[in-house]
Image 1: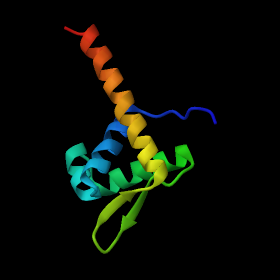
Image 2: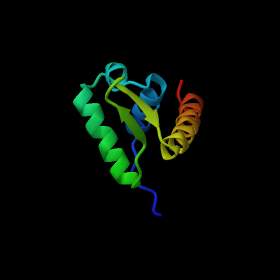
Image 3: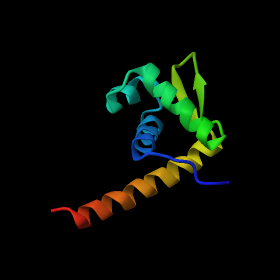
Length: 91
């Protein structure tokens, strides 16, 4: 599979969503509306061809799928590596 075009914003927002387990709380952390974050998640799932979260309407919570867990680990690592590079480059 070819590497899809993923932005650092998408990865960061996904990690915030996974940490909060709530679209509402994650949207606030991302400074987005809940529908905007939900749409971003839908686009991310489409790009990857995999469902990343399961939504629980009763508890308004999300749960990561196995694909979501895999992406979360990779996203955290990628963001950390990028931040370290920026820290070394910048003042």
